[in-house]
Image (cartoon, rainbow, N blue to C red):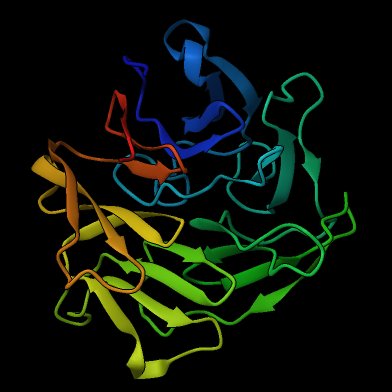
Length: 274
């Protein structure tokens, strides 16, 4: 789709467009004209000199979500990764006007993960996650400067690298397989909680997550030559179906009803779903 990028992460596919984070800018393009028609959609306030709180291709990249019309991300104080809150911007961009804040409240840290549980009234809402703050929920209806914000329960795990929240289940990736936390992998659990009864879908090493129509997509194996895999949410014998092999340093993955898309350090790929 497009090459010669600088560590594109936080990848979205919606409305005939793809959107991604690149440094302190959010870029986007039409599927049909991405190689020559990408543009900066909006600038992100932050401090790229603090890589532990502004993700790059080597750490957690999940900072953008979409409802099909707008995309949402965390905007912070100028040159800072603190005093942050969620904002919205149309998929076509808002560089001229800037994004719209969903609340006047400001969180203390830029989240590591943004999760879309549904943005319409009655749906779970947007969730942001930081290891020190836990999950914070933006409850629909999402209103400019007037959205209800509060803490929310989280899956029973120590480390979350990626997470999806459906109507009934959490699905998450725990990419830490250290001695203190040996049970890494991809798991699923009812939204109400499951404690030790969580179900493992894939064993480690697994990283990144996109869920659509009852299937989870991820990268599996050694980072220098990983595979793009899919696994049914009902289970896949902890093996999954291999879609592409020998993908070096995958930095994010997203799927829609038509295709699977993933990014490496400089290139964005896609494969049609069969």
